Amino acid sequence: MKLLEGKKALITGVANEYSIAYAIAKALFEHGAELAFTYQSERLKEKISGLIEPFKPAFIAELDVSKDEDIARAGQKTLTAWGRLDIFLHCLAFTPKEDLHGDFYKTSRQGFALSNDISSYSLIALSNALLPAFEAAGGGSIIYMTYIGGEYAISTYRLAGVSKAALEISSKYLAQSLGGKNIRVNGISAGPIKTLAARGIRNFSDLQHQAELFMPLRGEMTAADVSGTAVYLASDLSRAVTGEVIHVDKGFHCVRG
Ligand SMILES: NC(=O)c1ccc[n+]([C@@H]2O[C@H](COP(=O)([O-])OP(=O)(O)OC[C@H]3O[C@@H](n4cnc5c(N)ncnc54)[C@H](O)[C@@H]3O)[C@@H](O)[C@H]2O)c1
Image (cartoon, rainbow, N blue to C red; front, side, top):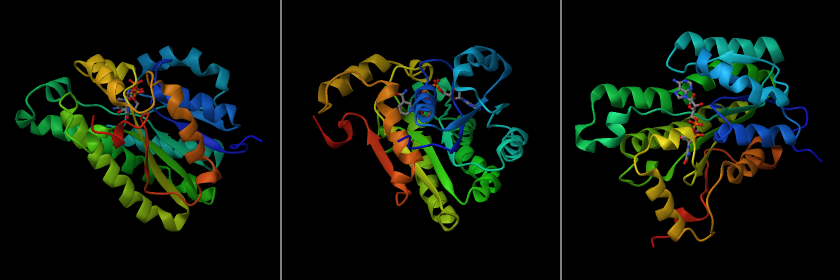
């Protein structure tokens, strides 16, 4: 039995074949979901169009989450094309390099605002824009990606971690305010995975090797490791789960050495 037959899923955050969003899209598709995609810029549209073609997307839409008009258009396009929405994957983040790598106490006001705007506020704004489509479906599932650097201070993650903390608590307030509409909001806290965004983190491979030393389950984390949990959160199997963050990190979150 396919778990997501008849469900419509809007996917953000595919930048290339290593993106976590790509692995999740593949798994949702294999479980029967119909997919639509957003891309951040024209340049990325060209890069990903061949990649997502096998999923026969219902539509693709430009969405730079720093722009209110793009967010509104994504909501309208979803409603016009499908008349409903069952699953929304928020799989994007951005923190300026200076504020990711510099001394944390020197974090700039502008960098703080930008990181939180792109990485956290976008979940709230998109949930609002997509609300009519979710309501038409009688409810649905919002899934976002987070990292343990939002719970503990991880020296290489810094401001990005502050934005993940804001994202996680925002998701709980969203779960509270959207629960009456049968819309669930849950996060996946993934272990370190080599992606484009991860390459922007200084000493990422040290961080990855350190995690691998302590992870109860052995071996390198891959985006495919995360996708099964996304299928569960997208499906009716998780119908009573909301405001939750599931750690998919080979157990790293539960050990201290
Ligand atoms: N790679 C990891 O180790 C890891 C671990 C835990 C959580 N995450 C999270 O997973 C998510 C996906 O990241 P990834 O690792 O697959 O990297 P990725 O580089 O493949 O994806 C990041 C995406 O964010 C998008 N993005 C950035 N700014 C945007 C904007 N203004 N508007 C629209 N889109 C924008 C990019 O276009 C890109 O598609 C992020 O939220 C990231 O923080 C990653």
